[in-house]
Length: 127
Image (cartoon, rainbow, N blue to C red; front, side, top):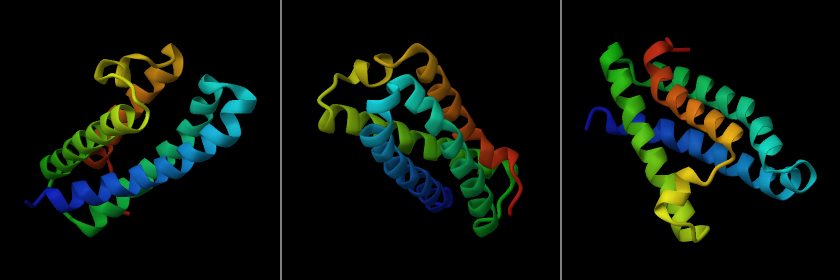
């Protein structure tokens, strides 16, 4: 239960920002630049949100490094579940397609951002 609150809040902050930026990406940027460029343009904004959110959560919920890694990994599990749910129930994609049918370049960047999302609370100090 100790990790649930920080993990949930961290996930909700980042997912909320991703939801807003994703809508902007899909409706305004993808038609002009294509999926790859749009996703790559969105990535620095998401990484900034992840950076600042991890610092705030570490400030609001002080814990040892192992606890910070734990809530980052739990938040990653929430993010993967949400990504899967949106892909299957909203976009009508298959479970495998939710993660495998991605652009090779922006998909790899997405995977990297998920790793950063999971470990940045462990690496960051409170801010």
